[in-house]
Length: 256
Image (cartoon, rainbow, N blue to C red; front, side, top):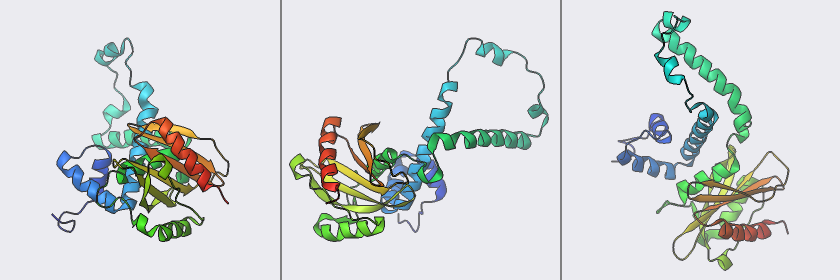
């Protein structure tokens, strides 16, 4: 069925992000996300926030001795018991919103940097590296146009590293959001079809960092910051292989 007859709504995107969508509907949403990077970025941000909230409350998920007795014991009449159901729900939601609102800024950082670069890179890999028909917007056959276009959007001259010595060739690239502004995603592939992605984006932090690893399921990401830009290489490969590839990227991305 066409998108016009069966459009993807915001409720659909929330259900997909929350893992509440039927399996047969997930495929339709994934096709939509592959063709709509802005919605893909929104879904990735929602998932990151869900994970952050889940991690924040994880310490309270364990039971303690005596919990069952407290639940079974008669409870005194409280204010919430005397309020109409809707009012009680409103107070509970307000309290939860206040608690998470106070905690999330320190947990996630400022709105512009709410999602760490390695999570953005891992999400971009998961969305696009597994796409069969439209993994990139501009293919490697137009490499000069690709790097010029992406560099112009980033406001920075960039190159597409040559990873042939590691067994990977350039597939192409696309424009993706990084910290809410234009970023670049370059994709590479080996002879077996295994893919890697290199994410480049501006960062408000001007400091330089050493290589750092992060994992998300089977996806490994190695990321660093240099000269106001953030870089992240992601793939379903070993950390040793990823380090070798990142070394090559780092050397070729240095200003001449």
